[in-house]
Image (cartoon, rainbow, N blue to C red; front, side, top):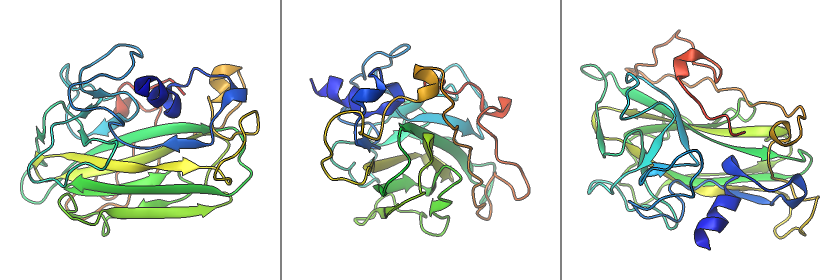
Length: 264
């Protein structure tokens, strides 16, 4: 039952009708699953693959063992703070360690994404989450809300008792149709992963069930509507990153990203 509920709450793979939408979307990485267990099968299964967060870009070459569109639940590293309740650490591979940047202080990077759909953009929406990452992290919501976690806020917080916390609300912070949360993880080598727990919710704490609920399937996937597509953000480049200054950030429909999810 927990697996079924988790699948419904994560709108990346909604199978419900728009009138059965929900008022809250959980953002947790590795939600409600221990290392080695599986999510409900959607387009194939993996014992450690996170089906609701995907990796959309990486400085590493694509490979059969770590396709661009996969993110994995990874074994807890001894140097990381324990994962928050109902979540797990996830990374770009099914192992803790990944290659760092190319020499010196040049960090490798990976960009992860989780999307959900907003049926009604009118109202006071609320975004709340805590995040830790090895080594550095930046976070954006679409290109509308700009930066939620900047490069100076997210450095070396993987073993800090106090996570990086974000709590924002108001009208206009989300857009009609698809909205995407982006996480950029930069790493010097060794362990690389992030742990995020939180939610996006509507104006009411406990709204009534029915067609007025706010979050549901993207209308362009359900009935051929014209839901807006969230554009990829422009990260702030930290010194020494392989996302060099002046380089363009790969867009979601770019071949630079390799395969991306088309479920939304």
